[in-house]
Length: 204
Ligand SMILES: N[C@@H](CCC(=O)N[C@@H](CS)C(=O)NCC(=O)O)C(=O)O
Image (cartoon, rainbow, N blue to C red):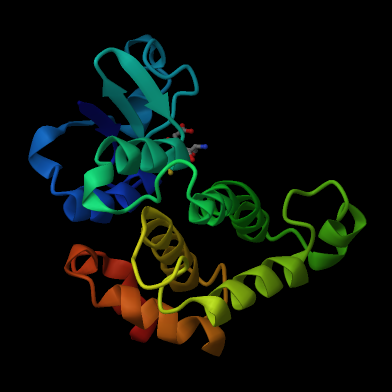
């Protein structure tokens, strides 16, 4: 497998997953400079001109959540994804899609300094609704986490959500709410997260 990435990109969200799966050595990493992402050499692989992008046996898998889901399923024996037909898989996919869709879109809006009033005017068509709905969803998920989103076993959805939240908190895109702390502190203890700088940054 080849992973096209950039060390300053959201592709880094995948690194704890690769570690948890124990497959770092099985992936050839190809760094793509931002200046080269829209050049034909790379857009012939991912026409979006974006990283990360995984290629497995000639099949191109772009979009972060798709790569997470694909790898956790490919190495399902590692226990990071519920099996097909397990109802927990529904909750697992819910969190994967929430991270990739509504949460990311909300973070993008905040990064652009779009006001809550502007968002409120478009509430019914924005994928995340409004700020309250994003935080209600997150808080409820964390209250119900026991200790992980799906119960006693960590899943790839935890790795994605925790990394994405901590990244956003460290850049002050999201507040570090008290309700997030026990969950984030739990994930921060994983060996796979030890090299992620954002966990340290939010405690500074
Ligand atoms: N929807 C994509 C977004 C990927 C994305 O926006 N990647 C950024 C880096 S964080 C990128 O490659 N930007 C280069 C560009 O757009 O020129 C995903 O989630 O994988």
